[in-house]
Structures are given as C-alpha cells and as structure tokens.
Length: 217
Ligand code: AMP
Image 1 (tube, rainbow, N blue to C red):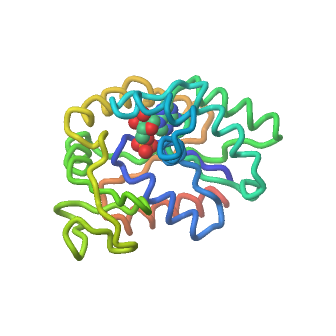
Image 2 (cartoon, rainbow, N blue to C red):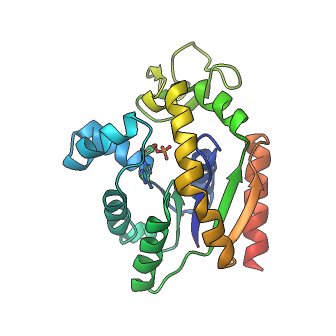
C-alpha cells in the first residue's frame, strides 16, 4: 500500500503516519524529518535546506524529490510506505508518479487531513518538540509530566523555529498556494479521501483505519 498523507502543517498527519507505520510495517517517509536529520548532521542537503525551513518556505523540489527517489528504493519500502509531507507541490506529485511508474507501482490513496486554519495556529504555536526523539507535546492540550522535558526520553523540549507565530502564518499561506492544488490532483484520478482531522487523535486514527479498510474492499 502506498499512501500519501496530505494536509496543512499541524493537521496531525505526522502523528497518524507514525501510528499507522507501527501497525502495518509500512515505513513513514517524512521529508521534514529527513531534512531535519540532514541539518543536524550538517550534510550539504541539510545546509541548503536550512535557510528555507527556518523561514517557513518550501525546500527546492529537486532536493526533496532526490531524497524520496532514493528512499523508496530501500528494501523496507517494498511492502508499502506512507508519504508524510511529500509531495507538497504539483511538480513533486508528477515526479512521484514518474518514479513509481519506473518501479511498476502507483499511489493507492491520498488522504487529506482537514483542519481549519485557526485551529492549526493554536496547535502549532503551542507545540513543543523533543530535541532528541521528535516526540510532540502541547503547552495546553498535551503537557509533559515534567515541564520542558520529554516523557519518553527525558531530553529537553523546544519550540521549533518554524512553529513561531509569524512563520506559521507563512507556512499556511504556502500550503494554500502550493500544496492545496494537490487535492484536485488526487481527486481527479479518484485517489482522494478526506478526513476530519479536527477530532481527537484516537478518533482520527479510527477514521484512517476505516478509510483503509473501505479502500481494500
Ligand atoms: P514538516 O516537518 O513536514 O512540517 O516540514 C518542515 C519543513 O521542511 C517545511 O516547512 C519545508 O521547509 C521543508 N519540507 C518538508 N517537506 C518538504 C517538501 N516535500 N517540499 C519542500 N519542502 C519540504
């Protein structure tokens, strides 16, 4: 199963991708995580991507397409995978289709995680992320047991540079302009499913599973 998780920043697609990956043995391929890892290691890709990310802008298409091209050829991607945060532009979606055709594969479903902008701003501005394991908390809705410390690995929690309010607005604007056209892209080829992602995490998870089960029939 090849799944595309579409949705604005803060819609919870990363959280849902992690849950699904654990349940179905499909790796979660998050270009955001790949780029953050590259930045941490100071690789040439990381150094190039950093200035775009800090500013809330999209990294160049060629750079993220290259990352995905290599990753989907890894042996663990054989049974299927979940694309989380890729594609984000029509150019990326077309490149993905081309890459998959070369491998005799295709996107099975694109799931849109729909959340109103106002709720996203509230989610993202209160989000705190573990520097070490990437676990996410929220200053109001998901507080860690000890203030500023990850429940899982006890490392410090930080506010991502791109989760500051000014940058959030910019990321949402870019989402509407560059990524939202993908809704029509996947709708046209009958692969789009829309989920109300304003609900609780567990309810959204149930909707995702229901969508998958329905598509398998
Ligand atoms: P995310 O963790 O998915 O919210 O991604 C964080 C940032 O990484 C984005 O704001 C972009 O700067 C960059 N990024 C991640 N995925 C992509 C992509 N598919 N295309 C371009 N930039 C990306």
